[in-house]
Amino acid sequence: MVSYAVHVMRSIVIDHIRKRQTVRHGGEHERVSYETLQDLRELRDDQVLRMDDTLRDLAKTDARLAELVELRFFAGLTFTDIAALRDVSVRTVQRDWDKARMLLFDALSG
Image (cartoon, rainbow, N blue to C red; front, side, top):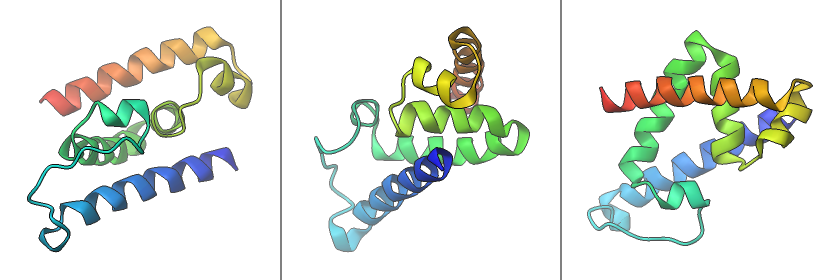
């Protein structure tokens, strides 16, 4: 259930960014919004869209890591929350997070 909600939240954020970027909605102008999550505020719209594409690719190779990124990045869950949800240790979640971040960084920077 939580996974579905996180996926929907991700879709809403991505659709909102795509809509804002259309010329009809002033997409040629960069907007700054305080409505989004802290992590999302630090990224430009094009970076979030690239992350969405990268998450789709990651889900094809490791769906568990892609879901972890969604839970952490889009839902804002803590490592403790995710560990409880997945019934694993916090350290396992932290190791998976490190691996996911490394894969995302490589994909986004290359």
